[in-house]
Length: 424
Image 1 (cartoon, one colour):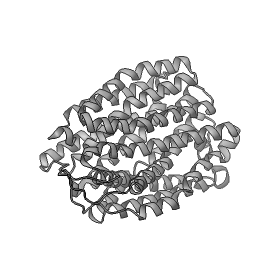
Image 2: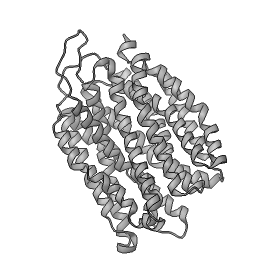
Image 3: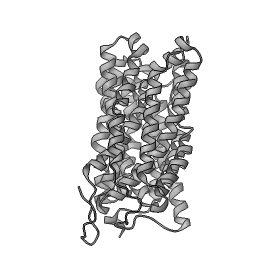
Image 4: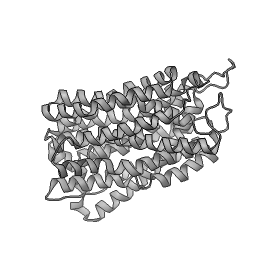
């Protein structure tokens, strides 16, 4: 895998192992962050015991949301580091911090053992995770954009989301295995900890891989990627904020399907975890499809077509899932919604990244993404659970997702085309 200049000259290539190191590291960081969501019910009973299962779940989901509070701080601090010192040191820092937090949560004693100190420690570690992840996406996405041949930027940048979906897939598969091999009591007591420690085992290898990266910050641009005027920059920032905020809501509602199937629809955990496998597999396969399509047809057409389909599918799919309450419908419906979502999301991330100037790309993208997730990521799953209980309808998450899809679609229409194949 090498990069090629616009005039046919061949600048220094980017080895496959370097791109893989960025994608794999990002995948592991999101595996750690999202595993908490998949085991929210078990973690809630471990650190937030209550006679009311819903209250315990809400407390656990609220702690999941705490990890979003420090994302903007991490984005500001680590994003500035990436734009000044380089992408490589920023990515090494985020990976180290995330690994430490991952091990810490896995080894924290339960509420029954150390009392109120247990939830306090877990919340502190979630804040550390959020700080680290706040700077990860901007740094690693900037690296992928700068390492890619101009006419394949969409594909390269889509590997960012593919890595996240690989993480979802692995976490889901591990959840299925654990929930089928263990009793519910064992899963609550220590089974969920296995999922965290499994990710921590890979941390040393990830650090070794990232240490071998070649810096891209000072490498010459192979083709223009960004607007330069202040007015255009502000416009891109506003539209990007709307798109990434809406995408955050849709993404975390898809991640919520496992908890939704278990806690709302009453499906056993061994079957509910299959929803994570289905959505993770669909995302892994179709993330690069979205990136490749956007390289060929442009970022805007892919975003608009994909999210129009998502808007039309959300309500019928959730209705079928709620009515049938069978694994086949749950998995198929989750996969279908995921495909409609991720194809547009990959195109959107490529378009937003290209529209930001290189001198502030990592920091700007990190801050926009962190603010989006801080405001909406932490409250989405709690809101879905609370709204479901308030109105007494399992269709509540569907209405939230459809609203997010409409907003993302509207904002996508306002973006200018940035794909080199179409923008010239």
